Length: 294
View 1 (cartoon, rainbow, N blue to C red):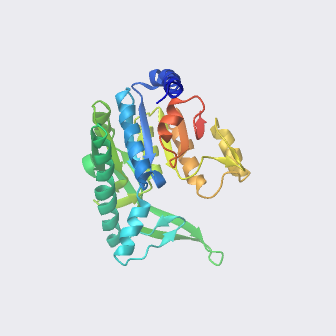
View 2 (cartoon, rainbow, N blue to C red):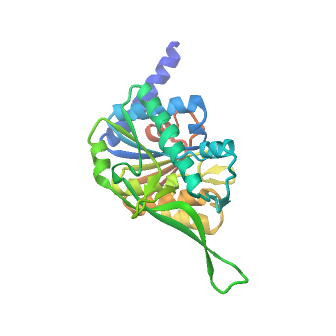
View 3 (cartoon, rainbow, N blue to C red):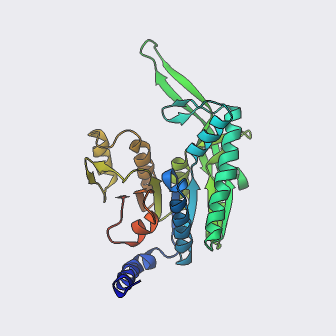
């Protein structure tokens, strides 16, 4: 490193200082998914970033997805996946695979990477410690030839009905970083596969998180070629009405707004394809994604 590079590094550290001071001791819930979970360099940089957050006094909670990994194993087993409105229809056999991949392979790899970078992480699913209570998610679809809505049964696809805050407080008060697989348990012991964005939103609301960060495979909320940031919930609603926000971004932006309405201070939708995306969004003046705040 030459002197110019060293000076630039010092400037970056200096720029980060007020943000570190502001967020020290605060809880940050991060939904981890997309390319950031599949590309080796991105996986390692994410793990290193999480350890750094903990080291400078923040309290990160990680909720992860794993859709592509589930799909790969199902394909290897000769089982075809069926999707309705972006959600995987999950019979008992598929649920067994989901639990094996999310609660086992993917979760333990994330834990290992964080620990390898010097952190102290523990993996758990929503079934551990009675963390995530769930109920079956059913879609309603109106057939134009029918007089009533048809209820679509997605099987073991669930939605959050409650979060046990006690186990989360145990982690927040410790040096351990929780890594949570989005699997919930029903009133009668049923196991449910839940959207990771939704789980992260519910957890952020329960712990009154300072921030909810959703890692995606997109730059953020775009209006043409322009990245939109510094949005309020009312501005988001106008962008939805004008169809600037549409398609796959809709559920993410709705999770962000739900989090704010539940007491979370700010929500961020950022590009997980960029190395050190979390640090760039949290600790630089410019940031890299879409910030939504009350």
